[in-house]
Image 1 (cartoon, rainbow, N blue to C red):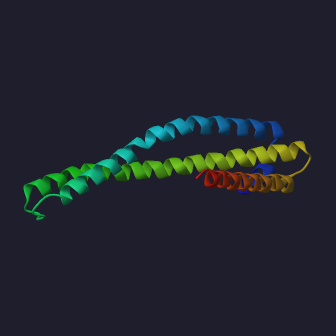
Image 2 (cartoon, rainbow, N blue to C red; image 1 turned 90 degrees about the vertical axis):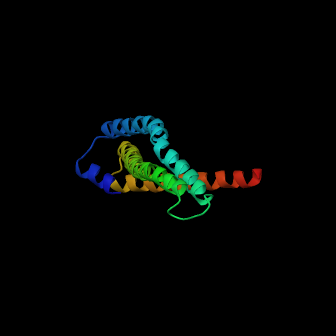
Image 3 (cartoon, rainbow, N blue to C red; image 1 turned 45 degrees about the vertical axis):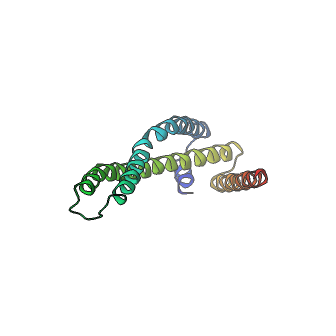
Length: 149
C-alpha cells in the first residue's frame, strides 16, 4: 500500500512500473535457486545437531566426566553454530524475497491502474483483487490435496 502511494507521489509512468514489475519477477526467479543453495547450511546444521544429540544421549554413563560425551558435545558446538548461521541467512533471504514480491505486486497493480486511467485507488483495488485471487487459489489447492488423500 505504501509502495503504491510512493509511486503515485513520484508520478511514476505505467511503462516504468511495468519494467519494475518484470525486473522484480526475474530477480525473484533467480533468487529461488539461491534460496535452495542457502538452505544447505541450515539443513546440514540441523542434521548434525540432531545426530550428535542422539549419539550423546546413548553414551553410558551419562556424566560430563565421560570422554565420549565430551567428544560429542564438542562436535555439537560447530553444528549448532552452523545451524544458527543457517537460520540467520534463511530469515534474511525470506525478508529479501518478501520485499521483492511486494514491490512486484505493487508495481503491477499500479501499472494496470495507470493504463486504465485510474490512480492510487484503482491500484489499491487491483492489489486487493490479487490478494483475493491468491487466497482462493490457495484454498482450491488445499481442497485438491485433501481430496487426493
